[in-house]
Length: 303
Image (tube, rainbow, N blue to C red; front, side, top):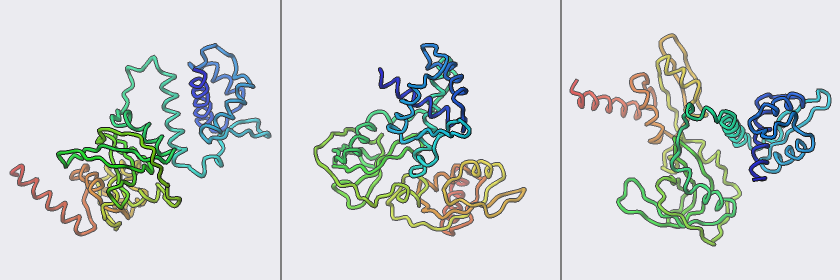
């Protein structure tokens, strides 16, 4: 129970200070006095506890709460998050959501969260194997095959994408790295076999050419240009499809976006979701593919 309490306290400190940007101890005391986590009704965040929990934040999460002597304020140290900014940003966002849910438990029936069914059963086992560099015995059922197959997997990293968790790893039956969905795993067993994690493996670089998780398909990166209607353009601007996204042209009637990306099946599927509000301009082969699909739709509906 003590560990849970410390975790929750650290989570509260990190999210509260991060949300404020810069905060005084007096303001922190006031917010703590009104927090649902403050079950004892404390009027302030006691100094001894505050020092201890600041240290725990750094030890457990690598997030340092720094103090500015001149302004007598606290803030999250950007230096402590710079080396792993993407992960730290995800961590802070996750903590913020979790903390918010803790604060509004009385409204739980009015908050609808997105369910990730594959994240509960095997994720902990895989993360443990990653931390100990241990191989896993995996029984895997592909959607396009009638029977499952079993193999040894050296897990390198995990990623969540469109309500599914995936693990990237090296199996004993394939030479190249492959991506496996956790919701297609039937069983996982720990083994005592150790594997060497390549020192030069970079998760960000591995996924960089791709839209989602369809990696290692042999699809090469190329320039893709799309033309979209104004409303669709607003959605794409607010949530870019890829880190290479640039806006080439914007008019009252349309916008043109450019990408340098491996146009894998999942990226093409995402373009399809925009329907007639999106036109593929380049590459030529992809434009022709969309045109052919449009013809088939017309024939299907006999229009």
